Image (cartoon, rainbow, N blue to C red; front, side):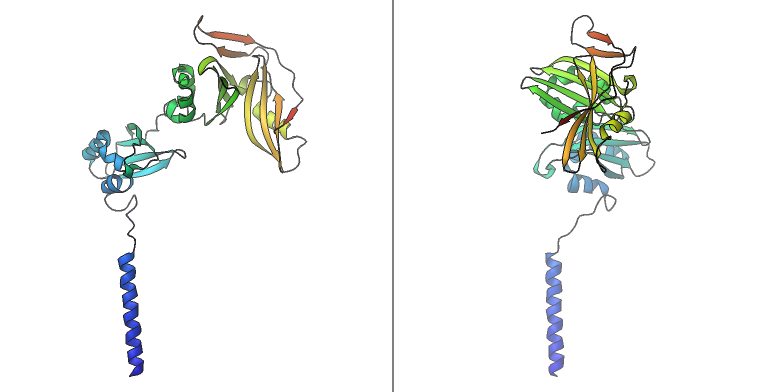
Length: 292
């Protein structure tokens, strides 16, 4: 009898705990691919979509949809909205990571493209928003915009500030043939722009990296590489090398090959194009400068 009472009491305790757990459980909303996709997009994940006329019209026209995200960088994502049946076109929008539920705006660009069509390139200002916001004059350089927007690279840029009012910005395409578009600014305005390709140099990227790593201890690696142009007639590979706990910046000279041209453009004037013809520069030595 006593044993039955103990078992009954134990059963009641377990039942109470189970009910409490169920009452306090957090309900996880369905993820993309589960449940009503339009409701999930509008209500759960990206509420700004339901306030955009282009997006709502596209979904209303195509009915049932599915959607997914594509990461662009740490500040933005692509959101793809695809008709669930007979997909001939899809809607893609560029979405800034923001507190959409708190009312922050996030949608910055929208495309409607074929389902098998590649994404069009982003505008230069969206590709590198920080540096274009810092130097608005960059938006006025058509050749820079073409360089950035005509390919998936350039994938990075570097800014070097010599004085508070003077800076150089290097837009770098280091996928495949190494190229750079270099912008010199003074007081926020463009003074000149220069385009450089390793195809025109006496020493290419692979050879420059090999020179930079020669004599370094085992395990040394290249952390960064930039082409620098000094005085319009000297071009060097500036390579950051890490070996153990030491970091060195190694400069490998690489002037233009004989008969090649470097184009430096200045705003205004007689078409703005200035060309320099250089002979093969001296190579075969490496200058080391310790990074402080």
